[in-house]
Length: 210
Image 1: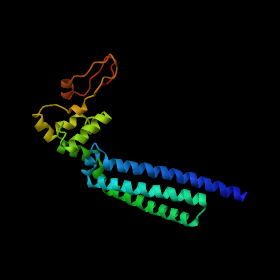
Image 2: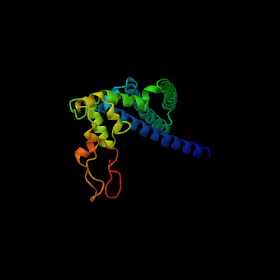
Image 3: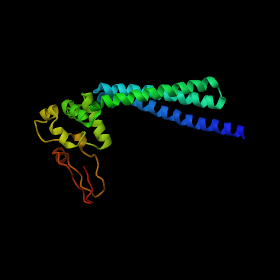
Image 4: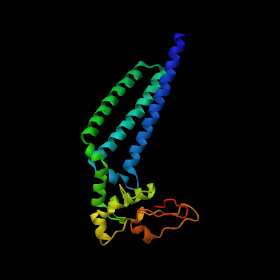
């Protein structure tokens, strides 16, 4: 009976560590993507030193969890005391790192707000300027996720460089426009209508098209 219990605990520990291994691999993958993303997403993150530090922490934590899960799986299968000791040591390190991250997030919470990203967008955005990595990245984000600015089209009323380039008009970036209708008989939005910065356009089914 005792042997069955130990065997069950061993397999449970293996499954638990396997999920840690997968979680670490996911975090590592996200961290690498943020740092090497060809669309330049790193430029938005780099605008805030705290966020770029967070990206490096994500890489470190992902690598640590990846290694932790591997050691835990091997230790559980082989019943190796040395590997299990390393496993619990890594658990302690991760706990201390998470505690430090929570404290830093609380101290610097003002730099992680919507207001910060709005301020950066209105300060640096240059419209359809493909040579400016910051603007090109924001355009890619808005097209990919179907959004317009941080809070909506009104953000661009305060974008100083963008308004200067558009001769202080009420235009919004072309990246805010949808690229296709939501239904076959829906009304196609013209480029001019979209750039006027109106809040909503409705198709024949009364569905929101922008």
